[in-house]
Structure formats: structure tokens, C-alpha cells
Length: 123
Image (cartoon, rainbow, N blue to C red):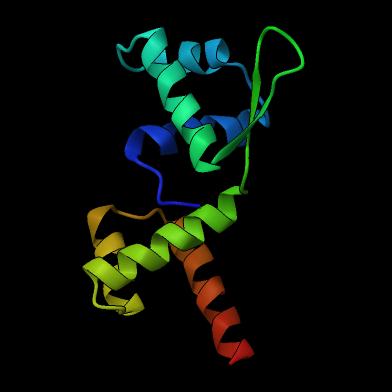
């Protein structure tokens, strides 16, 4: 699968959440946060289908779209690409930058520590 654009990723996120949806359902969700035309949403989803990012059930008049890959695979691919291009392949630089952008909650920091502990134990 090719790297999704920002608009494609927004649609993929909604499809991962809903499992499947029509263009109208996706458009209604996107319209809650920004102004966009139905035909724009339709065109993006058609392009995504052509790229293999989504599948489309054409049995009924209303086409139903589903994500072609799962969220984890896509996130892993995007992070790998970002790490390679923006951080010179350094996971440390990526994590430090990500943590520096936000103030993680105490709960999030505890989860991160637990994850790091698991990584240490497995290596």
C-alpha cells in the first residue's frame, strides 16, 4: 500500500473505527470538524480504492467501503518511514521529539515505562 495522504489517513481512521461505511457516512463524520464537499470525499475514496487502500462492496446501489489494511500495519509503516526520513533512522530521536511535544500524563508515563521494561526483558 502506498503512503496515505492526510485526507486519506483521516478517512482510513474513520473506517478503522467503523469497520465499514458508505461515502455519505464518512462525509457526515468529516463534515463535523471541517467544511468539505460530498464529491471531494467521494473522489478521495475512489482514489483510495484505486490505490488498494480500501475495498468496495458494489452489490447494492450504495457502495460500502472497508479498510484494506489494519491500523497497526499502517501505523508501523508510517512510523518507519517518518523515522527514516525525519530522524535519520533513530528511534531515540523520534521518541524524544514526540514526548517533548506534549506533556504526557502520569498514567501515560507509567505505560511507557512498562513498555520499555518489556522491551528490555525481551532483548
